[in-house]
Image (cartoon, rainbow, N blue to C red; front, side, top):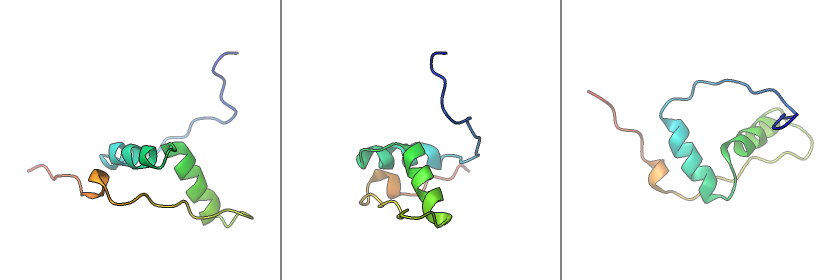
Length: 68
């Protein structure tokens, strides 16, 4: 079966931060899913798991503008 992932997709509500997170992940030469999985493994104290490194400050560091 083409494009059959090994794990089922999960849903989360993130909001406007999701696009900034994508840019920050790409600056680290990774993707959002890998960063989230790394954080989850660290959070669950899986053997050998390390907290993913944060990217340096960039345009994604600014809070989203609030709509009036």
